[in-house]
Length: 208
Ligand SMILES: Nc1ncnc2c1ncn2[C@@H]1O[C@H](COP(=O)(O)OP(=O)(O)OP(=O)(O)O)[C@@H](O)[C@H]1O
Ligand SMILES: Cc1cn([C@H]2C[C@H](O)[C@@H](COP(=O)(O)O)O2)c(=O)[nH]c1=O
Image (cartoon, rainbow, N blue to C red; front, side, top):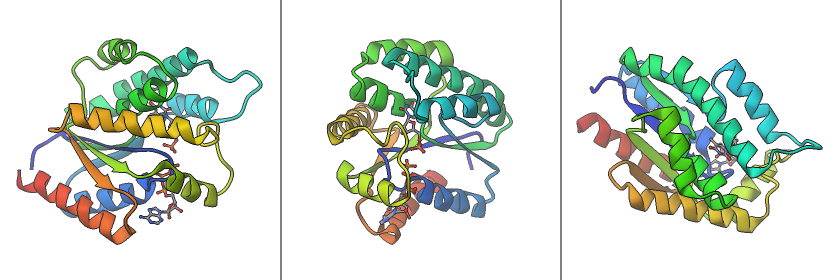
């Protein structure tokens, strides 16, 4: 098995990232892989504090550029204290969202130029990019229903449907630009069918 692989799971709200992250982690660990499971924004105390500010309601919500910089501040800390040390030690990292989410949400969703996001990506990450990204893709309205049935909505989840249509298009554009790295899964299927598709992708990884 290759050492130090960096896997990310992406998609809009309520597409099943948390549900399937558990499944992926169990599948990888069953292969004897030493795995760190983490998330963005978050994954360290400082980054989790930034996450809380990002997703909660406020009288002074971050403007799009402040939001972008807070996300990259959290990412810088997460990379330097969690992700890079784990990968350098040969461990695998499975991350719930990473920079593709920034292109989708802050780029396609909020309207920030992708070239500005690329500048920050290069500054904060150097050459670090995920080795494999699973995109759970689904009509945003279904995801919003699923997210809504879970309880109170956060600051992002309360955006209107056109925002999530743009986010979905942003993700699909990213996937089309990097087909070697992305695997797109139809997240509108039953959990069993979604996990069968994910297991097929992971098998490629084990055999490849
Ligand atoms: N394939 C599926 N079919 C039906 N329901 C599902 C499916 N996958 C997940 N769910 C349910 O949808 C809800 C949202 O799933 P989950 O929390 O895993 O999504 P998420 O992508 O992590 O959401 P968010 O990004 O908003 O935190 C949960 O109640 C989960 O049980
Ligand atoms: C990494 C990242 C995340 N976001 C947004 C997207 C979500 O609404 C929240 C995180 O909550 P979830 O439990 O993972 O759904 O943060 C973003 O806008 N940009 C990003 O780069």
